[in-house]
Length: 79
Ligand SMILES: [Cu+2]
Image (tube, rainbow, N blue to C red; front, side):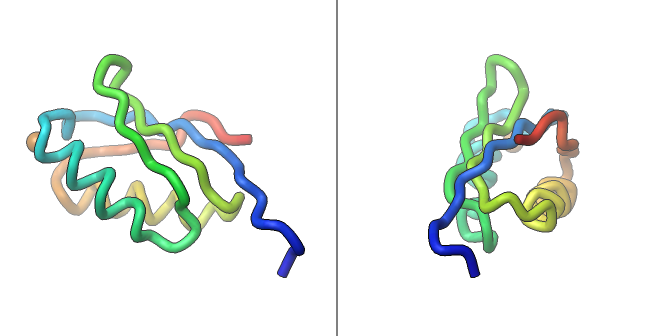
């Protein structure tokens, strides 16, 4: 384990899922995914902004989760 919890950021493209209840579900449940510290849906740009631990698996889990509720998310950019 590293000494500090590094925070990396990612932007996901979101297709569908931008009504209020989906946004709440994505933000609420997404935050429970291991490695995700912040997750915010930006409806204006149809993106999901994420702060995470740098582990790509966490982003894949967000995409899987969004797919499961019937929409689609793809990683656009990470740092
Ligand atoms: Cu919805």
